[in-house]
Length: 227
Image 1 (cartoon, rainbow, N blue to C red):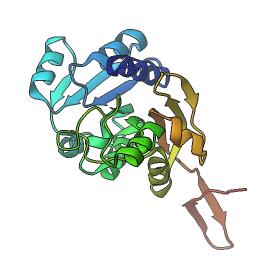
Image 2: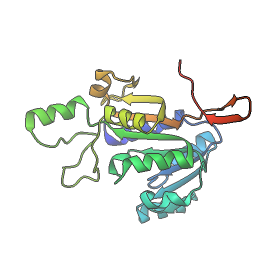
Image 3: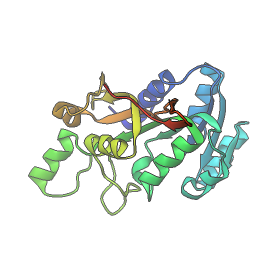
C-alpha cells in the first residue's frame, strides 16, 4: 500500500466516524484536502491549523478556514468544547508532548479522531531483529536521522495511555499493510502485529450526578456504578 493510497484510506475511515453538519478542527491540515473533502461530503463546518506557512496559505487560497500555527502552543486559543470533532491524522508521533496533545484534543472537542502508524507491526519487528537498525517501511519511510517522527509507539502503548488518561476508546480500526480493514480488539497480540495504521475515535466518559439524600442534607457528586 503506497503512501498516497494509505492517506486516502485513512481519510475515508475518518469520514465514516463523523456525523453530518459537524463542527470540526483538523490539526496539521496541510493544504486542507481532508477538510475540503469533509465539507463537501458531510456539510461539515470545517477549520484547520497548519504549522507549515506555505501549506496554510494554499489552504486559505482555496477558501478554507485555516490558520498558520503550532498546535502544541496555539490550541490554548480555543475554548472548551469548541468543536464536535478534533482530527489528528498521522501526526501524534511528531508531537513533542503527545499526552498533553491528547488532553487538549478532548478539551476543545467532544470527540477526537487520532490515526498513527503502528511501530509494533511485524515488518518493523522483523527488521529490528534481523538487521539490528531502525526500520524503514511504507508507513515510516524516513531514516532515523531524517524523520519528523520523534515518538515511536505501538498500538498497545496507545491503548495503555488512553487507559491511564481515562479516555474512552469508542471505536478503533486497523489497516494492514495491504489496506485491509478490521476492528482492533484490546489485548489481542495479533492486532499489534498486523496493524499497519490505526484510527481511533476517542472521548471522555461523562457521568451523571448522583444525589445522595441524608436526614439533613442532599449531597451531589459525579459517580459511576460499575457492575
